[in-house]
Length: 436
Image 1 (cartoon, rainbow, N blue to C red):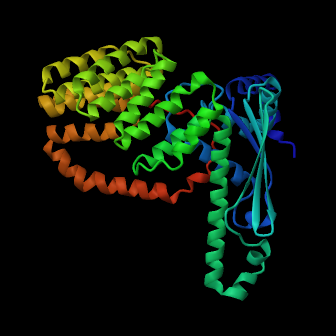
Image 2 (cartoon, rainbow, N blue to C red):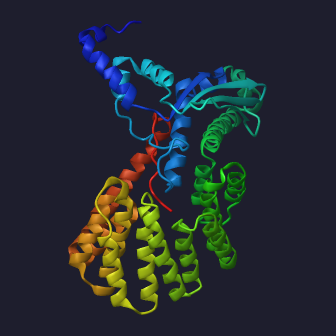
Image 3 (cartoon, one colour):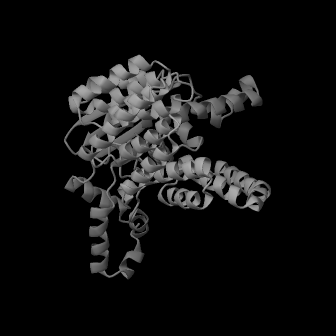
């Protein structure tokens, strides 16, 4: 049906909005789900829900991965900003905007998907096209059998197995569908940027140090990525050894990276960190200094420099050189300038200096300033926790009120957040934050 509300907008204004949306509201991925079987629709998984759920899961993968490589069209990035999307939806021109973007080659990846049911099996088929004229097909299926649509609609499962068993079967089918959508998101990320998926697995598996998914994905990265991009999966591979205490193997990997790219700042950075784990602090400092020197050749990786300064200070503290550690942290803070692309690097070094002043100098006033700067520059919860800690030392009453008022409030907020079905939110954009 034609939206008569469009006629209330001057034609030239509408054209201006349309043109601006085409240029600024660029999606990295355009995803259109064509069909979903009746059984899935009966459980709330219509085409729009499937599309939005997969897009949200793609966003969650990229957001968890937090890669430092910067924004390129080979990665799922710059997708969090929605710009004129809501406006274009309101005006009813969203599909036209996407069509125009596709015609102009502004959308790097266009995906079409459909879910088909064959007996107890669901197939999710995704056809992908890139702006470079590459194409691919992903065919995924559920791991365990699912219910037939007739069993849910007519209650046949209830007649045969009982109402309670029916609810269990339906719940299991719901889980299978959600798992299938998660696998679809991972498969899409793997096809577009396999390293981003490896980084995602690494973050998930680091607490247990198992890396059962990370290592195979890193091997895949080394197989498919160009030689100059292999420094990133190798770096992550070295960190898996480092986390497991296999320091000799980790250093061997970092040496290999240095041979591939002698100026890459992250290899000496992690090399130094590994030496510090072995309590070789003097040798570690040499590596941190090299990482800082190399960071001049990679201005897009300021996080490497700020991390090196922070770890350098930690090594000096371990050597009992507290005064020198303070000088290094101040030097690190002074090397950074304000700017969105450097906010995370700034936050890291300000937090390091703030915590140092709080713990070793008992200078709570200056510590609060730097910890507050870290909070302003980054939304990392650990920075806010550091700020709370120094405020508690400065204002004893704050700690009492924090325990009696803020903690229940935090619990309530988290409970409300869990009640929201965030997986159904439409996500069209992702911007991974910096993290080595």
